[in-house]
Each structure stands twice: as C-alpha cells, then as structure tokens.
Length: 182
Ligand SMILES: Cc1cc2nc3c(=O)[nH]c(=O)nc-3n(C[C@H](O)[C@H](O)[C@H](O)COP(=O)(O)O)c2cc1C
Image (cartoon, rainbow, N blue to C red; front, side):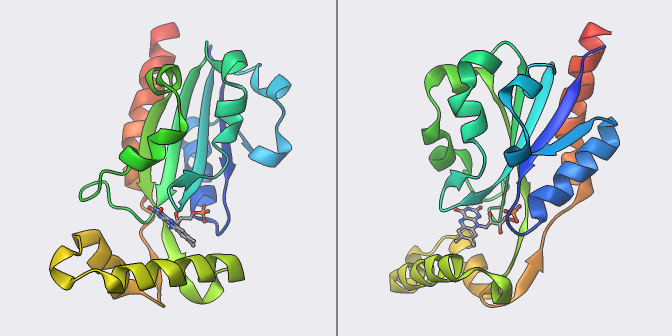
C-alpha cells in the first residue's frame, strides 16, 4: 500500500483547514513544513504539499524545489490556496515561474480558494495589500479585471471561500494513484 502524507504551510489558517480536510479524507499523516525533514518525506510515496499564495509566490514550495532531486521519483502534488478564482484567473501563469521544466512536468498542481481577514493581517501584509490597492486604483476602471474589481469589493472585510467539495479533484487524483498500486 502506498503511503501518503499532507504537508502544509499556512499563515492565517486557510491552507491548514484544507490540509486537515485532506488528511481526514485520506486517513493519512499530516505535518507542517517546518516540522518535517526530507528524510521523513522519503518514507512516503505520495506527498501533498499545500501553501498560501503571497504576491505570486507559494509559501512552503521550497520544500519541493530545494529537494526535488531526492523527491522527484515520488508522486508530488502541490496545492495552492489563494483569493484567486480558478474560474476567472489564470492562477498558474505567475506562480509556475518558480519551477523549472522538469518540476512542471513532475508536480501535479491544484488550486483552492482561501480567504482573507483584512483587520487581522500582519503589518507587512497590510503594507503589501496597501500597495496593491494603490496599483488597482491607478488602473482605469475599464482596464480592471473581474478579479481586480472583486478584490476592491471585499477590501477591508473578512471573506472565507474555503469549500471542502473543492478538494474532490485532488482526492480523485490521489485515490486513482492509490488504486494503480493496490
Ligand atoms: C500580502 C498578501 C498577498 C497575497 N497575494 C495573493 C496572490 O498573489 N494571489 C492570490 O490568489 N492570493 C493572494 N493573497 C491571498 C492569500 O493567498 C489568502 O489569504 C490565503 O487564503 C492565505 O492562506 P494561508 O492562511 O493558509 O496562508 C494574498 C494575501 C496577502 C495578505
């Protein structure tokens, strides 16, 4: 039987929620990126790594990037969590720039919608979001994308788009891989 693990890095808890739902559905181990060593990961066959997207970068993705040569024979799943809506945005065009061609061909990418609670953001994140708002407001209204308008609409509030059902494509993928080796 193949061994499965979920590893995650989460600043405000959205990725953590998905990671726990995944581990619950798959009855597998779960760890945070800062608690896990590559030696430990080598014991697993399927590794699901999740991280929030911050200004186009994926938290915790370096675990796969730095250790790719050791882990590349395994089934690697990377799930990103962000405000971006996969129905409206091309999420991976920016995010995938962090990976080389071999990584892009090996890692299986999925995106899930997280959330944001503006009043509880760290000072750094508040400043980053402030800069983003300035940029969005500078754009003529006609040039703003649907996501730009969506972000301005929820500005300053708390929204939570997490949805357990949105994990189905990942669960289907993992279960399919488990069946292949049963
Ligand atoms: C400073 C900052 C930058 C962000 N940049 C992006 C982004 O580029 N794309 C996106 O989809 N979401 C972005 N988000 C939203 C986060 O990805 C979202 O809050 C996510 O749910 C965080 O997950 P976590 O709490 O597990 O870290 C950003 C949030 C902050 C505070």
